[in-house]
Image 1 (cartoon, rainbow, N blue to C red):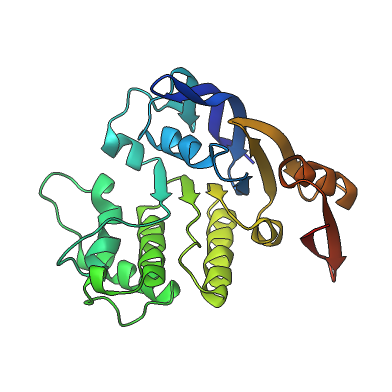
Image 2 (cartoon, one colour; image 1 turned 120 degrees about the horizontal axis):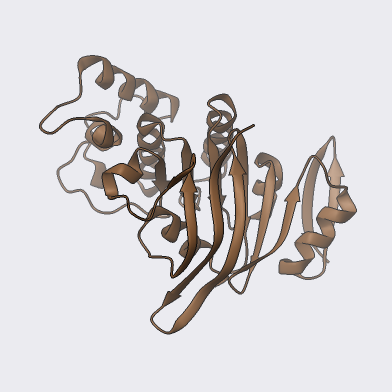
Length: 258
């Protein structure tokens, strides 16, 4: 697998308050990586820095060997797709048009999506579980349905790196599993680098290949699930969750508080 996303010793602050301190890791193509940590650990700040929404004070962020710092929004969008925790208001915009926004970095000035591209967007909506919602007002569908539409937009954008900030937070149990499964499949099949923050570590254990453990703005653990024993995974997770136990049933792992 090739290294697609490289975070090289970055530091990020809000005003005089340091939030991210000397974080250093990379994510390979085809690797679905979860960023885990308690509230306030710096997970969202890190993703916002990678997206260019925050400026790193130190260090370097590269995608496919290209440094992101000098790039504008549209140049970055060719390399990175981003699914936030909640979408912004888009009054009067249809669900299909929201998905088609994923094509913006690929279209020339004044160019509009082709019929083939529109048909692809409809197929992605169907894949996300929103068949028949193309002409619905985006602002009038549920929060969970909005996240599914944004997921479809990210797939249409087709950037080599997918960044996701708790995209499952507004979803019910069934749709949460469906979306995480489809994200995992997209990362694996298209050899993307996937980096996702999750509130629930058991979903990370179920769907991700690797766990990055954050605490107080630093990475305190890096677990590749296929390579680590249950005891090693348990010890790593205890760095952020305290006294926990790890159970296994039919090849699936589950973390429980002790």
